[in-house]
Length: 188
Image: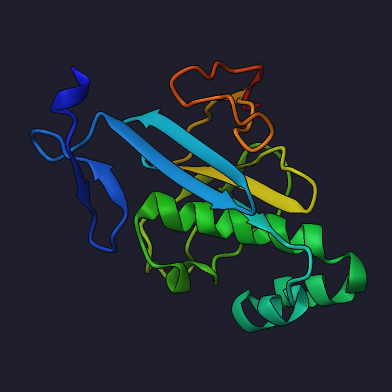
């Protein structure tokens, strides 16, 4: 598709999506940013959500106790001053699922998102959000958590590309940037 033919529309809760003939986009995307860091996910056909969150200095225990299922809130509280990374991991998993569903954040914070491993599958026990979603934690900048979620339970691979920041090098423009690091992560 030539770039000038690309059209975007908003989903029911405002998430931007590719407008496609027949209603089902062949390309899905999600974007997140926090404190100067940005993540962008692109997939074919499967709905995708991505999130990055800065947790340093935030009232993570209060947020977890207010919004997360009680077991997750208690787990965050039990970690005391070390709770930030665990809170960010849980929050970004939930928000990635919400973004993949194209829903409102308030509907997804109750999702049980604990667990380990690249094969984590998150289900909505109340059935308010379409799912399930296969979730992966991503390498995140210091003080942040990051996750990506794809609709369904099928495994997927993540290809990570890192770009230099225009903040770090003001002479860079978006049209001249090339990835300076990358890795391919297999879903086991």
